Picture 1 (cartoon, rainbow, N blue to C red):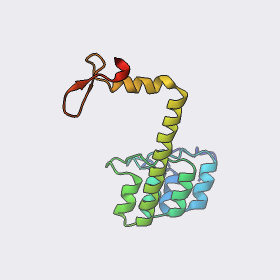
Picture 2: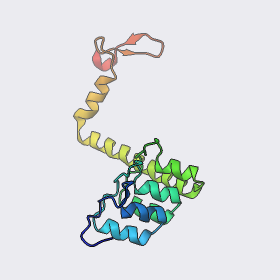
Picture 3: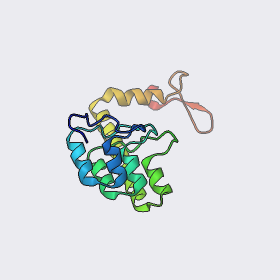
Amino acid sequence: MESGNAVNSPGDTLGQTPSHLAACGGHAFFLLWQLQTGVDINQQDLFGETLVHKAARSGSMECLSLLVAHDARLDVCNRDGHTAEDLALSGGFLECAKYLAVVKHTQDTFSRARSSVQDLKEPGAALKRAQSSLDISHGKRRRSDGENYTPSCML
């Protein structure tokens, strides 16, 4: 890297930054240094691939765990519609794919839990969702057999 270059500026014609190349090459120490200098962890190259895609493509658990620890997004799809987990699977890096799947599942679980806690703090949000599940026809819900019924709280 030349002195004075911005860490997020593409280093080649494919839009890959030095961080993309480090993640692809499994160079975790260089990648860590780049993350500490303010690199955009979710920056995509011309193929739509982020640092996580590059690390998964090369099967680098060190780089993947480093990127996850720095809150890299795991749901980003490249131009072909593949996530990093997909690339790890297709490359035969089953340990990496399993790791990404577990982390994604954990993140989704915490996100849902956070949303539920937020609903408890904002009682109006839960009430709005409950009202949206009611049928438009005078507050009646549809039963599974197609008949309408009025909840006892509405009588």
